[in-house]
Image (cartoon, rainbow over all chains, first blue to last red; front, top):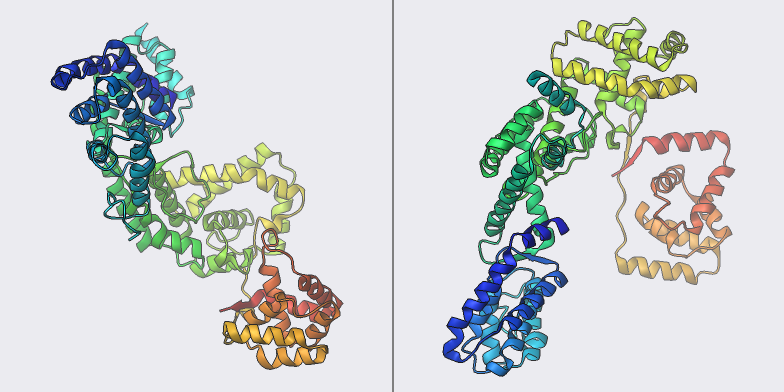
Length: 155
Length: 451
């Protein structure tokens, strides 16, 4: 495990991730959202801890960018909670990659998170993590076909 | 100077015991430590290896996920290393391997490795077909089941692209000299090659004699995980030592005495030498020309020497050189069990028995209602009888019923099965019978088969 992780970490992936997140500021400018260098470092730290905690390794570092771009137009995100929300979303994302048994791809998971965050959860990360994603993961584990349906019963 | 270097590399290769399952990594580490490859090459290889893993991860996740569980990545990496090792093992010298590591890109090697694996899968499938067509007609379930079904499962499940180092099939039949260090298709290829060699050797003998030899080894040899080749090889060597026709497998007590006299004073080394000489005679008499088979038999002879040496010392040659079991009266008896009671009927009966105060009434109920061995065992397990009542019931049973219960108890695995009170009572009852009855029950117990 260590060998693989070290090999991935040694090849300057982190530097690349850092630069790419900073570049996202260009895209989020229209929404008055900006991450400073400290925020980015914190988010990367969160990502690394989340990866380790979930026993996963990442072989390209685009998840944070994808989350930023997907959530940039959320009515529940503004500059004052921007960095904090991204941090939480990163943690939730990796946790639920495991909980959903890798059944759904990155894009789909981000899409689901965004959809429910903006509508059903009305910006509540607790609701997103503790109810919505919990139920979806449970649906997947139980083989429910319509797994995004929160009212579904076992097939 | 250059020659000396080459010789050193060659000798290093011979001395190095690279593992079969981590060949690529072992070679890389060894070459780097011995400075056959420098740091720049090692770095280049590590970089390429990681890029291959990244590509492999993309295929694995269908490019839908940028992260995976560490175990998944580790397993994919193991598969990559296995494929690279598979390719590098085709070179006989370390020098050639070093040349490849220096001059060929890892992705090229991986591609060639994959093609070699695919070819090997096809060759192995053909070999399995050959083995199926030419298998020995021996009475052994594990032999038949492994050849007819178990190995095919490997090919059904084998994933050469993502997990070439995995896959086992369902192999119960044990080879005399298996190499468990191999993995994936290498293991199957090796297993099939050796199985084919073992079959080739055994096919020199009369199949009836082989079956009698298996019976001689154990009356229930068809159910045992035994190796047919081992028994045949040992007895054929025994026959040659006794100066008998090499195609005969029978070894009598007198033959064992003769073998003992000839071998008992030899040291282990001399014994091995002697056995190898006898094996050479065997090759001549049976006209065995296949070099791989000859080498395999010689290795097998070396393996069995220590065991034979010890058996001679403790005078237990009858466990090594087996006498054929030609007893035709000794055929097995098949017992077809009677109809089982329904659950409700059984429950009502057991309650009725428990309510009886007299043992005679209990026995009457059992005798009139129980028509199958299974129900009888269930009743005995159901705590309907106590202490002396068991003996009273056993006394009322027929000889066949006693034989069936004896067989049931002897077939149980007491490590797992909770020993019931009636087992002890039954054992005491059987021990109390006269010698003739005990012997007869013991003999029939071996022959009876419950269907």
